[in-house]
Length: 276
DNA sequence: GTTAATACCTGTTCGC
DNA sequence: TGCGAACAGGTATTAA
Image 1: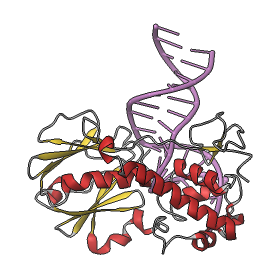
Image 2: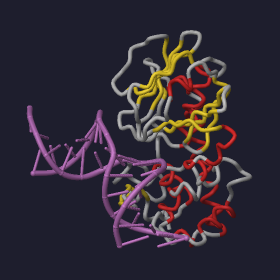
Image 3: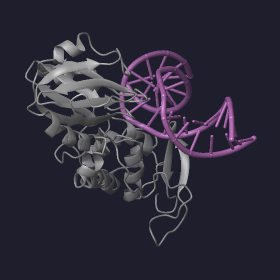
Image 4: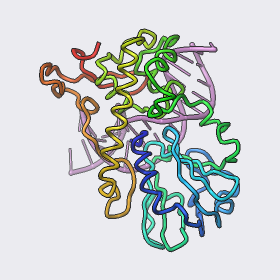
C-alpha cells in the first residue's frame, strides 16, 4: 500500500515527467474518486505549468504557475503510469494528464480510495486534510523521541493505533507501524502513554529508520519501480513482521513465530517474545 | 473531548 | 471447480 516511502518514490518518479512541463489537457474520466473532483477540475489545470512536486505525509502537492496547488492522495490502490502521447488507457485510469512535449501521465486507482483536490497555495496549511497532520517523521527538527513522548502522553489507545493516528505522526500506515514497533522492541498492545523516555526515543528512531530504508530501497532502484508499462506505484519490500504470520522471528536468537492480531480493525503483526 | 466502529471501494485470496 | 465470504486499508463520518 502506498505509505510515505512509496509516495516519496512516486514523487521522484513523477518529477522528470511533469516538472517544467505544461498541462496541455487534464481529462477526468469520471466525476469523482473517493470524493467529487473540485468544480472545473480539468479547466483549472489545463494550460498551467508544473513548477514543483512536494510531499507531506502521504500527500502529493503539485505546485503550478497558478494560485492553485493540486493535492493528490493515492489511497491504497492509486498509482501513476507514464507514457508517450495517447498511450493506451487501462481500466480505472481516472485522470489523464497530457503534458507538453508529448508525454502523458495516467492516474489509476481501482479502489478509488485516493482523491485529488485544488487548493489555494497561499492557504495550503488550512486544507482540512493537511491541517490536522502531526509532525513529518523524517524532519529531525519536527519529530524526535521527546516530541513523540509528548504526543503519546495522554493517549489511552494501544501504541499501534496511536502510530496510525496521522495527528500523532504523519505518514505512517499499517505496514510501517508494525515494522517500527518490531524494530523498537515494543509490543503493539502496550498503551501509548507508557511509551515515554528511552522507549519513545527508540520508537521515534525506529520510525525514521524503517521509512528511510524503504525510501532508499525505492529510490535506489526507482527505474525498477517504473514497470515496462510505465506504472509508478507501490513496490514490494521485504518486511520483518508484516505479512509473515507463523514464520520465525527474524531475530535468529529468538525464532518465535510471528503472531497476527486485529487491532482497530487492522491486522497487526508482531513477535510476542521480542516486543514488550 | 476521546476513542471505537463503520463506510467507502474492488481485486484478490481463502474456505467450503 | 465454483462460488461467496473475507480481506486489504487511509481517511471521514458516525456512534459510543
